[in-house]
Length: 109
Image 1 (cartoon, rainbow, N blue to C red):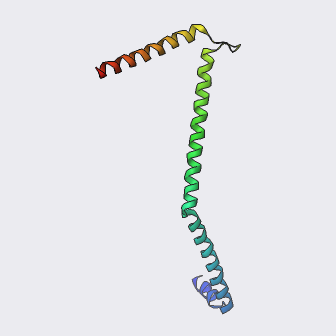
Image 2: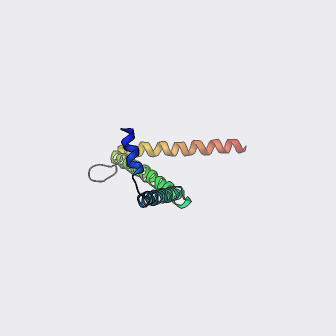
Image 3: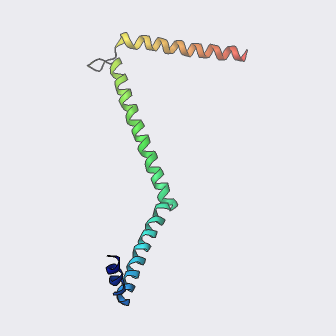
């Protein structure tokens, strides 16, 4: 079996060997060009930018879904604000602002 393979190899002509070499060089050149393109700074930069944009879009989508769910809790089916939910949240917000303002005033004194 190995002997037949050796006979096939030795039976090749010079032109066949040169054609194989030329084909291998072409394949190698294409591979090197592809590798050069993959590691080129502009290609790497574009890939990083695309990943960052995709991550930001995903986060923005999640924030939108969360915000829309939050808004539904404070608005009735007609789109009017629910006073029984808005007023307590507003009072808590005002209380937090007053608390922060008073703690800053104490630090200055």
